[in-house]
Amino acid sequence: MRILHTMLRVGDLERSIAFYTEVMGMRLMRRKDYPDGEFTLAFLGYQDESEATALELTHNWGVTHYEMGNAYGHLALEVDDVYAAVDAIRARGGKIIREAGAMNAGSTIIAFVEDPDGYHIELLAAKVGV
Image (cartoon, rainbow, N blue to C red; front, side, top):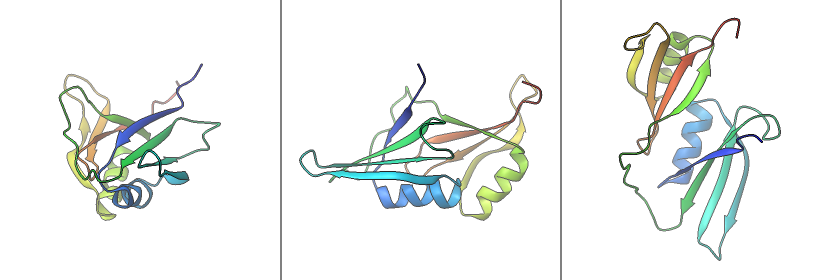
């Protein structure tokens, strides 16, 4: 077994695709409209779905906003250099909500970014020798 994808509901699919491709560096792998259900699915990622987990963006037609709720935490992305990733994301217009630095009560370097719908994305330093 393996995890195939994680799904986020988004209010503006074009804005979210632009964020994840242009700011976060993912690529749009596939997209499909479901007129009978009035929704569109878009799958994005860094590698082919056969090799890695994808991010599914679901846009329910006519819905422009979702309440975040209190159960959602964050997506986590491993990066080679958190400081450099934060600088690159900021330069491409991304919103940094926690600057790069050591995590609370630990030494792992992390940072947080917020997507256009308010979802948090954690950037984690790649672990060496794991």
